Image 1 (tube, rainbow, N blue to C red):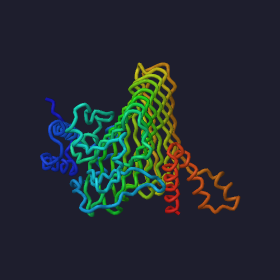
Image 2: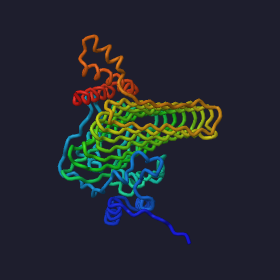
Image 3: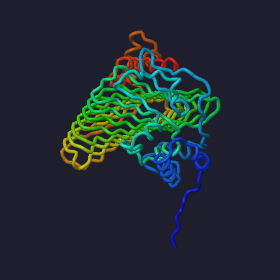
Image 4: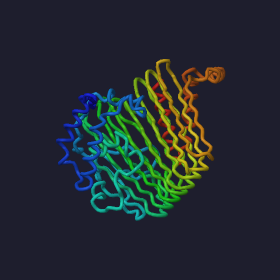
Length: 434
């Protein structure tokens, strides 16, 4: 006699089931969106929160880390201010408590080359775009976001348009009590267009709020997209962010993830190169301390030949922090002439800090150039001694070496203003450490 064995639901999973049952009728979006929600939650309910026995989640056991599920965040009651980047002029789109807030935003609606539509209004108006049909759609966190998504926007850049000012999708938690928000945004960059997209996450310290966000990014033929994700979450926050990217032929895609905030953070990126001649650079920098836990996970699928990708990540870990890098490059059988290389480097400032690096290659083609590497270690004492021998105090010598280590990663950011703002943020982190 065979019987199905199912793990007992955790309190968080039970709370999520109860929350969906109570909210399913009131959540925005009907028809196809409602069907999508039901299917997503059914899938999540069958699998539960991801845990260490699932290979992709072995270092970020969400079943253990997420002890309780917070209630859905209510809409913001008062107007607030969106925190931008110092020295960077951008069109800001505020996603507050998981919902698009036009009154908080200063998006330039006068530009005919770019349009902004509220997520569920977009879903109701057209049928040509299938919401949720992106790389990463089979991930458990993505299912949970789909089930509970409360709002967001769709940004569309028209064919051949160069958007001069960066567009900032500013995710903000603005409540006095802990709650959960589930924003979903879609960005469509048509053929030959250019866009710098900034995605930021902000919230207050001392509140253990939760964020499960998702972005669907569609890049057309010959388009150029720079995506910069900046995690400045509150010190008790738990955030899982999913990015699903589909890239067309001869496009250029650059992605950079910069994380300094949050108690538990997972940035997961799924990219599919669907046609030939694409170039991509996917990189990031993480600076964490105390008991912060930050996981950068990416899956790059080369499904067409003649594509080039570079993945470069750097982490600085102090105190008892835990940094994770998981990168997988998949080269399908017909993706000949693929050139893909991946590297992760971690700088440990404390004996208690922990770094886990897991680069992977799955290659099913024979005419490719692929490689990966990972390192973890302490500051170079020889270089430190050299600086100190020139009269530089020890703490300043350490700061200079750390800044140089992180700066090599930040140099991948193409936008000069954003690059300078991230360098300033890394200096601020170092000053706080001192």
